[in-house]
Image 1 (cartoon, rainbow, N blue to C red):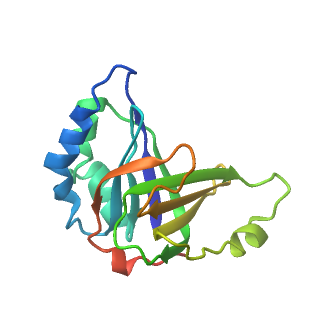
Image 2: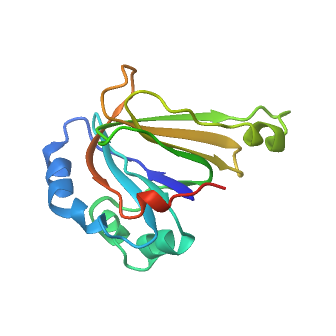
Amino acid sequence: MIAMQYEITLPSNYDMEIIRDRVRTRGHAMDAFEGLGFKAFLVRGTQYAPFYVWNTSAGMANFLYRGGGFQAILADFGRPVVQHWPGVAFLRGDAATAKYATRTITRLAPEANPIDVVGKIELEKAPGLHSAAVGVDPRTWEVVRFALWEEHPGEEGVYEVLHFSEPELGEITAG
């Protein structure tokens, strides 16, 4: 499992209906993408920030630089930084739909032993949880925790899910 996200922050006066229309008309192209566990098409304010969980690095590579879809982002918005985290944990919750998403990123303390810290990461089911993923960036030693929810989780900074592609959701396994 590889978690991945890029963030496109648009001008404050940007008409986000353009993004909503983009997702309505193009989002289905990811519904059968090989190697993709899921893609959540996310917006928050004037930010478009899709989040992916890849089952294979080949699927991720096909998307990013073998003509599998990222070329549309490049053409319309330029080349964003693509964050990615090798997977540590994944949990499928009981919720049938994913309408909201949360993401938290924390940095391991400099003195922390990653073997001890990462080895203890666990995910627990919660009411309304669709799925959750955890990954670690070994370059920065940041831990990303990403969760999809059926109902608004009641915290700030929540993303709205415009479309959810889940071609290989049932095949996701974490390291």
